Each structure stands twice: as C-alpha cells, then as structure tokens.
Length: 196
Image 1 (cartoon, rainbow, N blue to C red):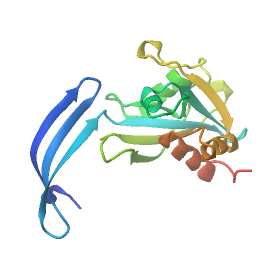
Image 2 (image 1 turned 90 degrees about the vertical axis):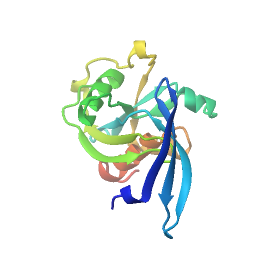
Image 3 (image 1 turned 90 degrees about the horizontal axis):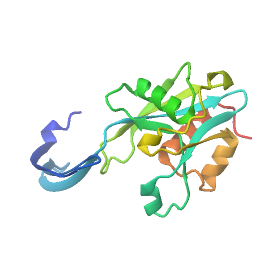
Image 4 (image 1 turned 180 degrees about the horizontal axis):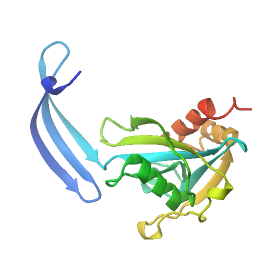
C-alpha cells in the first residue's frame, strides 16, 4: 500500500549538513479515523549501509571487530564496542561495499557473501537501511591483519569467537550493538547447530 495519499509535506528545513544531513519536516498526516493531523519530525540521513558476519562452520567461530564509538561512549558505554564489520554504501552496491569493508576491517577476502535480510535500524529518526550479509571464511582468505583505515580514524581489533561465546556475550551485555546481535542470533539459528 502506498502512503502517498496519506501525507502532505508542508515544509522541509535543513538543520545541519556537516557530517551527515539533519532535516526537520512539517507535514500533514491522514490518520486512520479520516482526520488530518499536522506533525513535525527530524530525520538524520547518513545513507544506507551493509554489515557482514564471517563464520566458520567447522570451528563454529565468527569474526567481529572491537573499536571506539564516541556516540556509545557519551551514552554511557565505557568500553570499546564489539561489532560486526560494517560500512556505509557510499555509492557502491551493498555486496561490493561489504566485501571492501571486510577486507579493510578484518583483513579477509571472502569468496562468497550472501544477503540474508535488510532492516531499518532506527526508523523513528534515522533514514538508514542496513543490508545484512553472512560469508564463510577460513585461514586461506587472510590478506592482512585488518584494523581499518587509519586516515578515517579507525583503530579496529579483530576478534575470533565461538558462536557460543558470542551468545554468552550478548546475554551478559558485552555485545550490545543491534546489528551484531541480530547477525549472531541469525547465525545461531541458521548457520550452526543448536548452541551447546
């Protein structure tokens, strides 16, 4: 169902266009009861992204990154954040971008990557749609130690964990990044036998 008949844009103002674009939009919304309501919302447009969880079904392991995230820090997370490799598309297809990010962050050149789903991660305010991938890895795919792009301020540690360790880290709060939790749970349900 298209929403075009239920929304009338009144005004769009750019509030910030520095790192990404923050806009404030005033619009009329046709409510379910047939009445119109004027609303105002801010949207943060950072572009779409892709994320990938490398997995080894034989060793039952996955690869994650560990890095500093300032927004998480100012929200009270006083540790490095454990995450799946990810990046903004920047004009690339999701598959091409995630291959490049995995090489840069994890030091791997994966043979095959498979898209498993796409989600809006914070649709109340952020326009980003994230494309989720998985890809099988082994030692022969290692190109470098990884670590990210220094000129972009990345200082990334590569972590290899068993899926069972990762699930425990979700439970005890050490892994608290949404995209990463989603990919680990997807892997536990679809790529590995039931956790031990």
